[in-house]
Length: 460
Image (tube, rainbow, N blue to C red):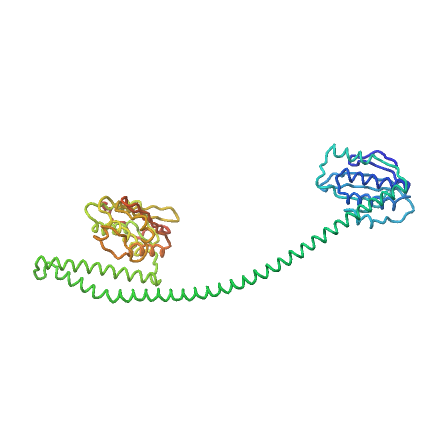
């Protein structure tokens, strides 16, 4: 087996003319595979495939074998058998195709080729030193006899058989473990399925129970709403009559009254007003919960709205409390439900004035499209931290000395939040005992055209 000059990607070239050259090709191929780091079984497969191809083409004119590491994205060791002619039939590639990655026949007018390719190990790093070791392995050309080659093939075959036997035994063991695992998985699946069925039964029963309780709660809520609405309607007429008659008796042109009679009638009038406010609040809350409050949106001049609200609310405070309203020039015309917005702000200002002994109550306004925010702050007594979670409960009133002096319904804040949410906004409250309370009402803002002239500016 003779060597020759090589191309850039070719590591070595040999001539193939005798059976001994085929024996040597097997040894050389196995040595190259070992130098590349292939496993023992791949070394034997690679060498056997080369031996089969060499034996099939032996006798062709000018038969040579090239070992190459071609450049490209696929890392392979390529062995090229080339010849110029001969009387042999087309090459038999089937034996080698079973052992290598790829084997192909490339016929040509002057020189035919067989290209056999096998992948390089993942751990092999290309480089000058690595290629030099492969070239050295290819350069160790022995000249074995037929007996030596057969003995070498026998050793390789025995080694391959032992490896196959070991792999078969390992496969058997793995199959047993897999069967055992499958049995465990099947048992676990059966148990989980049973538990899931039991859980589903419990969930169905719980769902039915929740549905029943939800229906009862809805019925209770509807009954409560109907009760509030009916009682409110029934109470409004006699309470209005009490208030009206009391004011007739207190009128300047009515019959003279003693001081004690006037005081008693004033108490009746105040109690009637409180009762009338409670009835009104109950009726509004009932309508809101029943979904009977409809939002009627239209152009709302906030200058007019807040001017009127400020004029009314200033009469409800004390001389020691100043009510500060926004500058009219800073107020736009916005799309809103004027009536509902007025109720929200009136409730918040009323609460702030009621629980502020000295200092100020301030209403501020700002626009940050697409939202507008009304902020009511006061310098009042504030709300203890442990009371904050309950302030939006219906009829709940914060305990304190001012609460005894200013009795209310406990519906102001819940009603204000309900209306705010009905208008598509949010109401947030924060408070510090002894320092005051801050309430923010954030509502959608849509500018609108001015439909009426603004009122004259009033002093705060």
